[in-house]
Image (cartoon, rainbow, N blue to C red; front, side):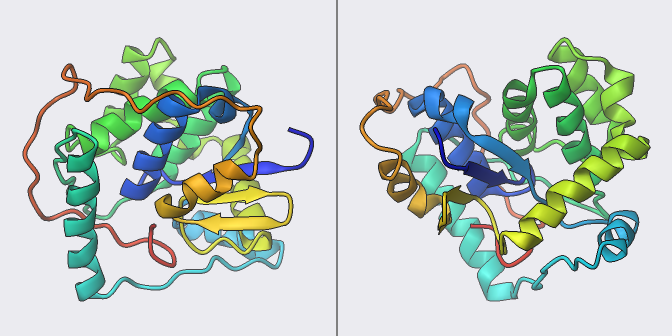
Length: 234
């Protein structure tokens, strides 16, 4: 890939989760060559870092009707892929906890693998990925340093790296995820993934959609998760 090809994603978003699955399972070569940039609703500390450089995060509160639509839509999309979602309950989440942990995992060459484990924990196991104890456990399962990843949100260097990612999102006009960029062309949402992939040309072979992975937890969907996201999630 000679032009910039970017995948903006959030570990919070169910649509990012489904896009991640599509990319890593059907188009692993593309997934490996894309630039992955995390995107999340910043806490006060991250907002201060953004403000210092003259940036402001775009956020629109989710309406109640949209929230219920997403509950039904994600269930429908997951069912079509042989998955059963368990809805996480987010209480006072700090999204730097999982996303800065992802940056730490990426520094060890394990970003894609760790994202997959975090998504599974959130959307198939209903775990609280904003709990440092959860991140420590997932890091340990992934062969990474539990203390390093669990404490990533308190690391000044990772805080600044995270702020740089959010600044890029602001500059690229990102307002929701998944969000794909190929050169000057931008695509928002899971339903734009195929259009984005088509712009990459025939060089990148497509792997047929996999059969449902019966080894994954089979958990019934239940309501209650906070699916609000900056500009809507998908």
